[in-house]
Length: 199
Ligand code: SME
Image (cartoon, rainbow, N blue to C red; front, side, top):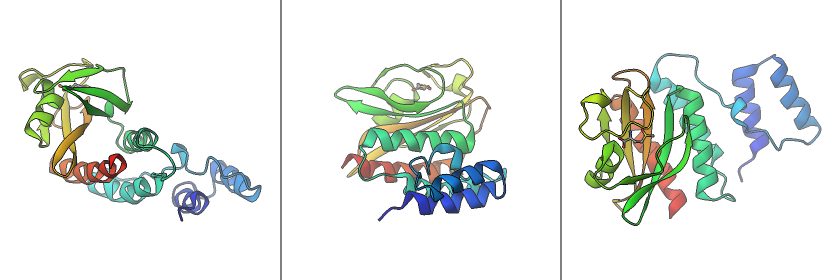
């Protein structure tokens, strides 16, 4: 059984040893108040510029964050927050297939377009082609939908059930050429994890 207190202990000790936040969480635990044990502030973010190491530290925490008693929206919302906190991208979120279009789901970042037609923009194209699209320069992508003018590069990863695309994970960066095969590999693993929430 998932134990948020046990997990918070591990993360907090890894990141915040000796500081006041650690003491505060420890005090809450002593008082039996571990309701907020897995709040985003307790996420352990590997202190390295190596993105693979950051993903490797994030994956088990994402798994631990998944609350079987909560629905897909709540769990995906937390997953997007954890990704945002880990990588600091401009925008990270999901668009889910709704009939003939994609509809905005849980996200972190500036406000975004609510509907995207199949085949339109990077998201609609990734859905249409049912494959990950890495876009090093959004201005060079024909039909790119600029929800934010600050976005320079983007990656869109399908969320699939039995090979069928039911939505996409979309990440936008303010830096050119910010996404590569490491992001693709790990975001596809995260997509697979999230897809199980929709079964
Ligand atoms: N740029 C995306 C639209 C979504 S926003 O970036 C959040 C696209 O071209 O599909």
